[in-house]
Each structure stands twice: as structure tokens, then as C-alpha cells.
Figure 1: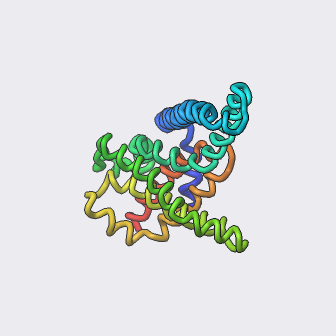
Figure 2: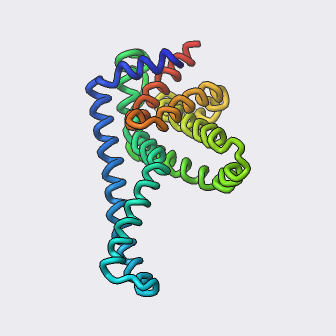
Figure 3: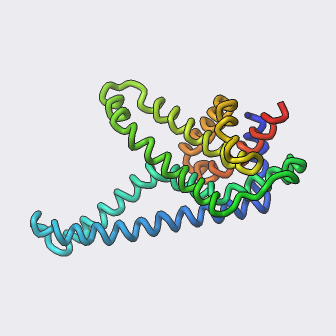
Length: 231
């Protein structure tokens, strides 16, 4: 897995992967910008409704709405960046996987099939929704562990490593096996995918590196998939 990481890191300047990085980053920023505009209008409307009840004038209510929008956007960036970034890279993952296969696994590339755009979108959006849904479902447990001071960060890391490893692995498997065989493949590669997800989750927690973490994760998943099949 360490070798896969350095091979993936070394291919970041590959033209095809650099283009995917720029596209995925642009889409991620556009999504956040759109959410920010919608949130700003929502907070402005809410301040107009609630402001008079709180004795706030128009100027004070507007300032409060602007501040609330900024705070909520920063919170959303911290909480939702992983989900949106993985959803976006899921849409473009086929291009990353193909670039890695072209350099390192040409025989696998020759037998691979392109993943239809509709399935790529479904997989990407499904990944993002799954990350948000599972973490929301576990939020009471996270809060309980915060209160008791026991292992919130550890549980959060383990859960998200499992989720990310599943999604990154599926991005590669979709090119090389029928969909019906993917669940059996998941069962055979639980620990491999968990290790992959753990590295990816760790990278997503590091500022600046988190911008390229989804690309590195998809490239690492390609190496892990093909080296695992060889063994």
C-alpha cells in the first residue's frame, strides 16, 4: 500500500490526472458557491422574518444574516467537503483509473470497459450521500462519546475509512467485473480496502493535501486492485 501511495503521488503531474483534478476541484467549488448563494438568500429571508421579533433593524438583520452564512459555510466546508469531493471524483474516477492503467497496467486497460456516465454519476452521488447519511445516523453516538470523552475521533476515522475504502474500490472494480460480482469481491478484500480508506481519510484531514486526496485515493485503489488480482 505504501508503494501504491508513492506511485500515485508521482503521477499527479500526469496530464490526464491533472485535468481531472482541475475539473473535480472546479465542480466542488461551484457546488459550494451555489450552496453559499442559496444559503445567503435563505438567511436574508429568515432575518427578515425573525429580525423584527428580536428587535433587529434591517441593517442589523442583514449583518446577522451575512455572519450566519459565513459561519455555516465554514462549518459545511469542514463537515461536507469529504462527501462532496468523493462524490465529484466518483463521477470522474474512470479517467483517473484509465490513466493509471495506461502507465502501469496496459494489459488490464486493454480488457477494461468504460463505465457509462450515468453509472459514474450514480456511484459518485451514492458515495456522497452514503457518507453524509451514515455519519448523521451515528451523530448521537459521536455526541455521546464526546460527553464521555471516549474515542469520538477514533470511531469517526474508522467509519469513514470503511466508507471511503468501499467507494474507491468500487470505482476500479466497475471497469473490470460485472456488477453482480462486486459484492463477492468486496467480501474478499475487506482489509485491503479498509487500509486504502484509512490512508485516504487521513489525507482528507490534512489541509491542502485534502484537495488532491480523492485523486490519490482513486489512483491508489487502481494499484491495490490490480496488484491484489495478481496475487
